[in-house]
Length: 448
Image 1 (cartoon, rainbow, N blue to C red):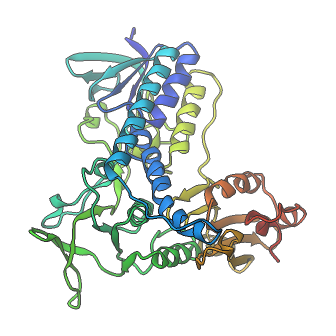
Image 2 (image 1 turned 90 degrees about the vertical axis):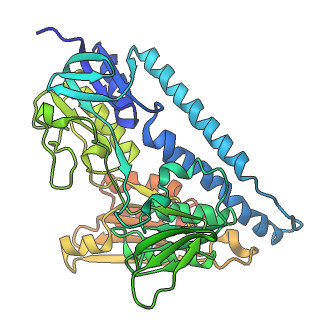
């Protein structure tokens, strides 16, 4: 049978862009559909604009720290509109850049929302398109709990478009998105409250990481309300009134509420049932190790499969799919020992197993090495901020199972350590490595 395309990709985000260009490089005829700006969550409303706002939020502390090093006191002014405009301009520049990359690769970009007609046919606007293989790479989307007044809250999508900076800002949720935006808004001068249903933020991370980040955020002035959820939101003349669970809870008045209680695969409107595509128990597309769905010609990568929801993972999955199906180089991606970071203040990064995971797998046959210290940078700043590092080691083999750190430039530090962990490095390998002095990173090779 003859098809319009060898490959049709739904979603021009990280996974879709990577797979489409890689497939086209093997000579495949490829088209990609996108109803929003090209670039996906990471470029448009995620990693990139968020990191730019992280940078902006750090300057307020640098003005303070500089005085300890002899710089005179200044009274800085922050312009929210200038930051938001600059971020939006950069996002749109990057989106256009990705469009040019598609053109250069020979991938046809089709604007519109794609939906399935059958396993080989999709509809985009008034076009009906057939393809030998179809890749779903539509990512994820924030969702809100169903409580009265939830329409008055915003999600991470709207955070980059707020016309005014909220002076009183609340975050509902303890995941990395909520933690990062709480830190950003505090650094930019807002009064910030974070509401979480557990005692600690970042459920699923190593507990020492969670407690050190939360303690650091609290020292910067972020107010934590723990073991609570929001039951109702009312819009009043004074602001949004948040009613919390528990008889002892007083309502909280804020100017804006970020609902960061979770994300789900962005599958609405795709008409997956027309193609007979199965979902797993979590509402994500069910795939095999090589990203194949139950339909032999349909594949899915990235957040819509809810495996490991990170941009580099979606890119790697997309390229592995293209190499396998069009480059005749069969391979799949392992989701073990993937490094990740939380761009909070203080920053954190991690790779490998948490202590809890290690003990579940190896019992008492592990040893943890930790250190907590004031970094040299803060010798004169007056800040009480600390760096925390942790190595988790399997006793019998001496192999490093996990590495975790909290502190300035944590992500840059863990990126290199992740290579060692993935290569199976041992504690002895770390001990035999000379440290760079004076740095925080040298502490990883001097732990005893």
